Length: 275
Ligand code: SIN
Image (cartoon, rainbow, N blue to C red):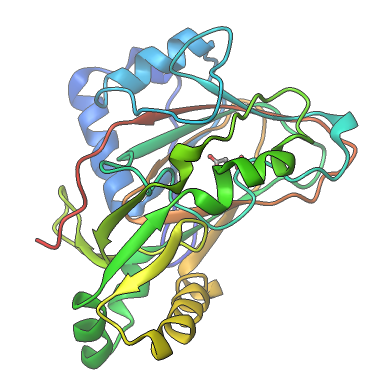
């Protein structure tokens, strides 16, 4: 999709892939970070079954699952929801505040607005690779504190109440936090990743207090530089699969007055590690 990340692959029907083809696709996702496969027909049940071929279902906190399947969430903003805050509307890696964040996310486009509602991804591998040695060493010495408190703690409930068809229930478990190395090694490719996202990283261990705020702001601007990103304009039926360990993403909210629905599944991951 760009010189840095993203690929489009034609597959007539992902439901018919053999085990070795699923494994080949998994390698492609790990290499390109996000792969879009157009024109897929999948019920919620079929998407959940396809996801299970990649690993166990990820644990989904705070969001009520689809009535059609407990492993699927409907990412849905109704036309009548106006300019309500949208789900995924800030740069994040899915649930990075968990001890074992999801390895992969799959998003299947059901009902896409006539314009707007694109998704952006950024490569945390490219963000790491662009660092000079001093910054690589500095980042490798730091631990990031991930928490959902500014997304799903009870004080955030009203932010989500504008989505009439999604049930998001904030609670105090959002105040919990997890320590993950700022530089992680991808468990499948061995590549280094700058595992930062603004939505959930709230602190850094290993830095003076006087430096933290500036360094967090720098991480945000660095990891979201245009040169590390790609952007997808959805069509109904597109299935995007991304590597949640080495890419962060952002759902644009520029389609006020139109309905947007996608179905999301996540595949369980492992604890992020330095090596
Ligand atoms: C998400 O963050 O999982 C949703 C992304 C999107 O709706 O584009």
